[in-house]
Amino acid sequence: MQIAANKAVSIDYTLTNAEGEVLDSSNGGAPLVYLHGAGNIIPGLEKALEGKQAGDAVNVTVEPAEAYGEFNAELIAVLGRNMFEGVDELEVGMQFHASGPDGSMQIVTIKALEGDEVTVDGNHPLAGEQLTFDVKVVDVREATEDEMAHGHIHGEGGVEH
Image (spheres, rainbow, N blue to C red):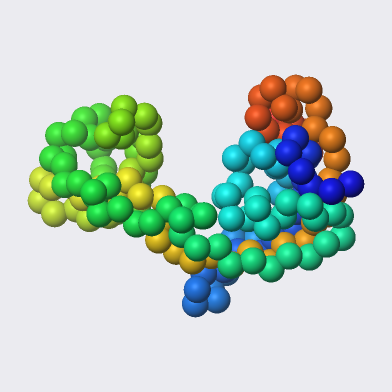
């Protein structure tokens, strides 16, 4: 069975950056299971897997525009500590949910702390990065009606409700 929209796909993968540093891998763990065509993985990888089948190997380099987007300096802001009311100890690397410019929720990461100023970054940690995926397709099956309705895979290697 070929990978196409509304198929449940299981992959083993290793993700590296442009310097060859391993950023993530399923090695030693369960394969990643996702619903193809539902935006569960980055667009560049999803396109590269289209039409593949169990046993196929794919090595693809994905540019930022087809991954986590270009780095956007407008998503960096300096806020007062008083904006973090109820949080006793702030540390670089902490993440919070915040309202984005368009009103949607986004995750911001504390990048710097200086006196009463807190610098946060709303970019995805991999924004602006060229990413390389080394993938082996483990399995392809029909997605269930529930999985298609929910937009993600349930059960083994997927999301449990």
